Image 1 (tube, one colour):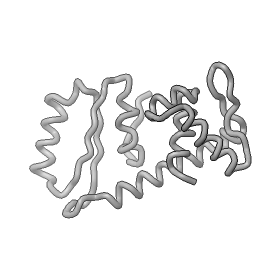
Image 2 (spheres, rainbow, N blue to C red):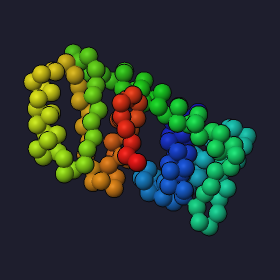
Image 3 (cartoon, rainbow, N blue to C red):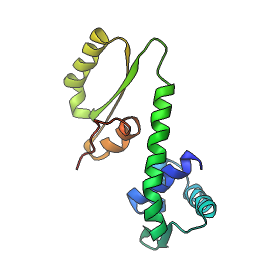
Length: 149
């Protein structure tokens, strides 16, 4: 299975819509449909019931969701571990609302550079309504990351 199919599947679950998923993934709706069709063919089961109002998970889709989440998390963990820059011992991912960056997180980044030069930092910012979707790809595998309620 390819990671893009799993991510596409999860985005449809999150948004409830093939169209909204395509917008958030910056791909065409045709590509979203093709990825899901290929995934359904590979699994031999329908994952979504498509309606005028969007898409709803089938029983097989609900069962597959936890596997897709695990697959994406394992992939991200492997990607992060294998892409630690030379001379660094690890990567810290931090994300915050745009309003927090100046001065709080900016000061923290300067402090980290001076006190922990062996640690690479992946930083991201966004407005409150989209912060989690921007920061989650880097933070989703960290045991201490928290998703806002």
